Length: 430
Ligand SMILES: *Cc1c(COP(=O)(O)O)cnc(C)c1O
Figure 1 (cartoon, rainbow, N blue to C red):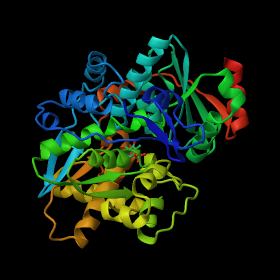
Figure 2: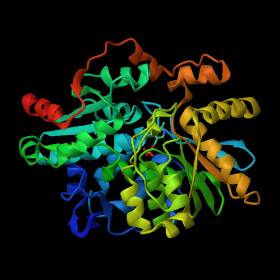
Figure 3: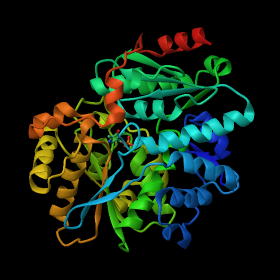
């Protein structure tokens, strides 16, 4: 069985189960697998996504979850596809938005919910999941955990900083899903959640876990669709472009590469919150307060998975061999949506548009590279109707799964942007 160590201390090792249920290591480090088992030919010969996911999961979680149970989990989780669409020339979009919240986080959130539910059932415990969201994480997590027995989910989101649709998705499920409207920024929400996990009093009274991308169970299943994209591309080597905020998605790609996937390069695309591209260019990691943009799920000033990226590469020189970073402004995001719609009749959401801009930047300095470039389409454009309207003047229809939430009543609890308020709330409800 593969053990998981803390990025702060390699000698602090736990089982997969402990890593996923605790979320963060005791010394505040992030968990990483101590070994990356290699993908085998059987994985590459799979014809459907869910079967492939099962084969990869078997390699990743060998001995951890019995094969029969693992098959049940992957069959329940991966019920929607991640199709690869050719945009033009050698540029493809991997559409990751065909799940219930119409964003890529559905894959990992569903997987984590199923696996946590599996362990909680076995142990007959109750669990409270804390999750900070800048918009999309919360809705994917809420849908993933909705009605999972013995698990409550508490979502922290920044008041007034998510779209109306995102807010509806966060606040209308009810049952075991509770939304806290924090009078602050996403970084405040994330900090409050992090503090909760290291508060001894709170942890002794409430059985807490995390569903943010700091949880290794959110990270690992994201590598599945990198592999699926590679299979669909039918090329010996590929390049990925990943629109990034907390860099969980991109780190999952790095893990797929560690498992042997033939990835020539990763393009890290950010909006003006460009801490990582800046690091790749200057060698200096300068975390700072986030700035609000049109691609708001990527408005992150201190990307939590950077600790894992450093753990993998150690220094900027070796990281640069695999990853190249670019940023896009809001203006460029709008122009890109317009350009791609005009030229290729395809509507990119603002996050994926940041990615497409990075692909163009990459190609302008690597003109001779004809390796297929796979851009992650991280969200359905209909999730951002105002921005799409602004860019191309089109009123885009909501997918049915999202339209339903718009008619439901919002339920949320307002709290101040400090840990004390969160702690009080958590202690008083239990
Ligand atoms: C969360 C999110 C991102 C950023 O993903 P990270 O794993 O945080 O880097 C990009 N696009 C969309 C639509 C998202 O919801």
